[in-house]
Image 1 (cartoon, rainbow, N blue to C red):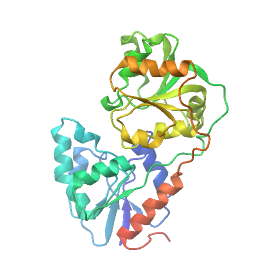
Image 2: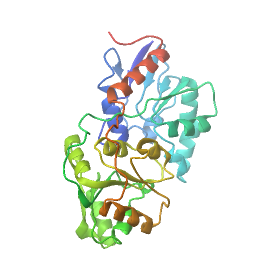
Image 3: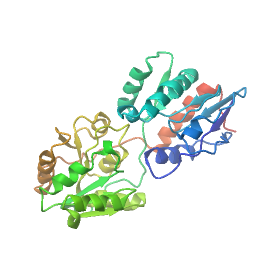
Image 4: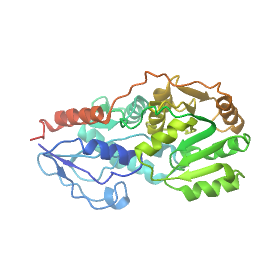
Length: 319
């Protein structure tokens, strides 16, 4: 059998980073899939995947399409199923789930997502491979002096990221300031103005790993108020940089990463609790990060993907 790969996901977001790091380590002997539509779009899922004998299509994202081709996809999370959107529910039920069952294998990135996918599939014949996520070598403690009144948010502004609660909390802690690393800085600035904290919020984008690590290494803590994450890569980058993470206790995948290297907030929406967590770091009483933190690399993630695909394809595709 031969392996063809969907190479369209690579980019600056979470799935894009995963795709970039895994595909560059996938070796040789595979072919790029001839798919032109945006992955996950209506046009893409309706594009027939031909059932050519002896081919397996691998995607680092959650996209599948109609047709008989074996498609091994990566379901990073099931956040779409938390949304009241008929199109997502129909896609997951009518397209994605049958494709996964036909392949007999699906990738994911955390134990939290692995459990959720197992419940959703309800099919013991499907192998769920938890590859985890990697962390680049740039993320390591820098030894800078920390600014106790400076906090960091890294992520987009989708509803499940719960970003507004941080601005509401910032309004209760006049000594504090926040830097947001986000693909939409203008939206952050607009929200900050709405909450009356624009003078204490800086929004940036397009940072290199080294620049981002420098930021992690200078702030008091990274604030991570997400309701749900498939993994939570910024949390891993933060603790690997020696910076504790303040997170909602109900976000299991982030709790899986952070452990005791941060502070759990009991309420998802109570700005007062988030403000109190910030005050703990203002006065240097919040938990710190263990100096012995170690996590798997992108090399390890890619090796897991390669070994699993080799089993599904039936042979190694590398020359």
